[in-house]
Image 1 (tube, rainbow, N blue to C red):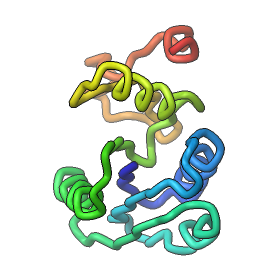
Image 2: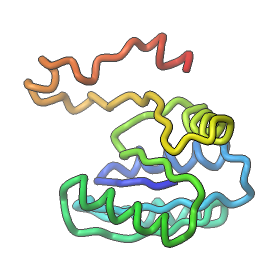
Image 3: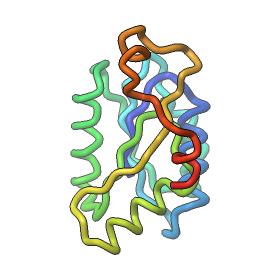
Length: 143
């Protein structure tokens, strides 16, 4: 599992708690590249007894470099599967188990599943107008 983070400790806490409860491994490996203004190491520390976490602070602010960093970390750990999610996305509790099942059952090199983007802080007008993040909550919940 690979995560990219920013400045929202409640999002990271939710994701890590979800992974603790849904993964069938005793201590899943989680790689976190934190590129937020306020590093979230204190959140990570609260989960070290349940997860094997590889945490790094990455100073570049844009998404591509931090995703590249977290992918390198996951590859260096010789992980079989890599799942990426940003800390402003909300997966259903079954998001990760279903991705893993799809990858294992089909031997696919890439699988994808829906997540909801957080809209609490609003969206840029161009993104709202384009409808790129429009979802049907029924489809999301039933996935």
